Image (tube, rainbow, N blue to C red; front, side, top):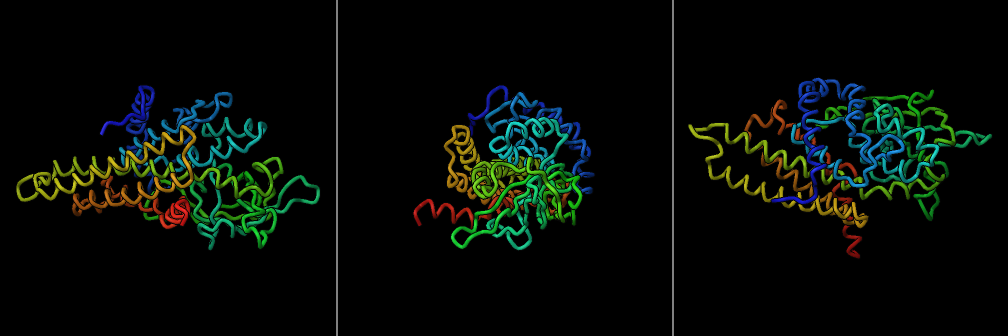
Length: 385
């Protein structure tokens, strides 16, 4: 199905990203998976290529783009290669909106040039052991010093993407107790320098997928954070998190669309080449029917994702709309990739085949950014139920 969301500039950028992946990622990707993340300098290469600073304002060394479409191009080319850019998507798609919306001019001048160049990699630390999606239950504390110059942070975080290599971490912490009337009050976001005394990276978490995305446990023991590094107003952290939910979930939706499309292409190529009982697997009616089903679902996923993308660019994407896009795209992508893996037979279960990596990587999209069950709750509430 013909798509209309991209123009010539997007396609030129696509060619650049595709060439970069072929030359600098594919040959070493297996080593990255073994290490659990790309080398630190890889992010500086992404900065040089312009990938990290696409939406960073020009005065801070970025491209000044308002649309997410160039970010979608990156996601599609990474998926098409069966590869990963580590924590790049979290850095550019999840964290930048917080900095653009809530950082003051002085903070932007300190952080955004390094953000765009890859000299400063960012992560965001929300989840804690035992809290899951219940962010109102966050227990990590940040107490203001008596002289009012800094906060002292104590607590722990888990499942933090990019946590191993991050230079700065947006830490959601409790600067005041919650109240019986409002459990969400009293949360603030501090931008923590990972070289600070008392900050430490604990266990690097081994996952069934996303092998090149470093996921870690973080610990804070009397970590001092200057008040100048608080993002926005004290106590407004929960509303800040809510503000970015639509883009976060859209990012997951278009990532799922990219992986579903890539899986279909891998399966088509495989069944054309693979022979069983003297003829290509593609010649069997079952193969044709399964791929016809997958192609139809991929088009549907793409339509939902592209429409949500256009809504986001117009500023009309609601939290409920984003929840619908995430729910549909991730669930449908899971079905498509499972079918495509099945057509590979035993080879689909071998990690040297990209379909196996897509299968493992895609599973988490129904969990992070809010589980499918949470998405259904949001959608039902929007329906007045």
